[in-house]
Length: 331
Image 1 (tube, rainbow, N blue to C red):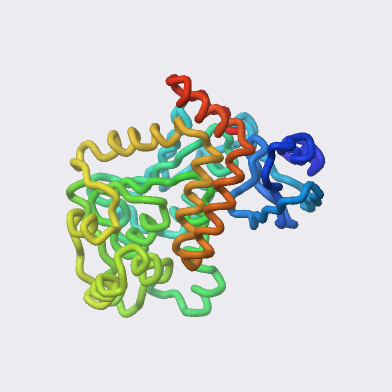
Image 2: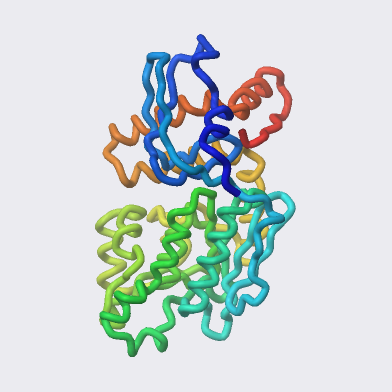
């Protein structure tokens, strides 16, 4: 659904009409921008100015779509999909005979469903999970074994999974059993990992004569530090849930048979908050890995200031003062 930029501008707070406003929001993005309830995508480059003269320049704005306009595929072969009423979507890797190995079809289906959830205004949080025996035991080695380097490059092997890492909405990985190689990398693409006590993590690619290709050297190092990541990648060993939590890869550990139940509770809590504010918080934490400390602080400061132009900030603070539950409207 496309709306004009002029309508979007009217939906934003007009500082000229509000003398108490201390800063102006300037959007420097020239291409399509995602907007939910008039709040700009926190991935945009945002700057502030203290004068009352402002020029907002951006082209066509893409809005979140009504769920009635989203058509989820009905012929999924390797994915199970459930959308709950409270805005939590559960995406289950479903290739049990191969321990959810990441074949090309599974990767394509996962990327397709995540992309649709991103557009669906009724989806607030996603959970990606697998079976009790395996989250994903790695890539499909049989499928990969005969590929040439040119084929890997031309097909951009596993490149579709970047949609998970780049998603605006919160995504939780619920991991039971094996999360090895590409499975561990997929879990790290999510915003945080809840692990069952039977979970096992590792980057065993070195045993196959290759190295990780979708974050096993980069995201893992940022998550657990150089020394641990180096050991994981050079030995190819497996590590249990407790060691993964101690290293900082896992957010928390729960009993394996309660993994999905406990993860849904966390997702429900996140879904109860303002969606654009949750996305602002996610964007700021992500930037901590991409920027210097000062750049990250500046980015956080700008998004913090921008929350004061939202209805949900007003509602949240009013509810706190009035000692009542807030009623967020995602605006």
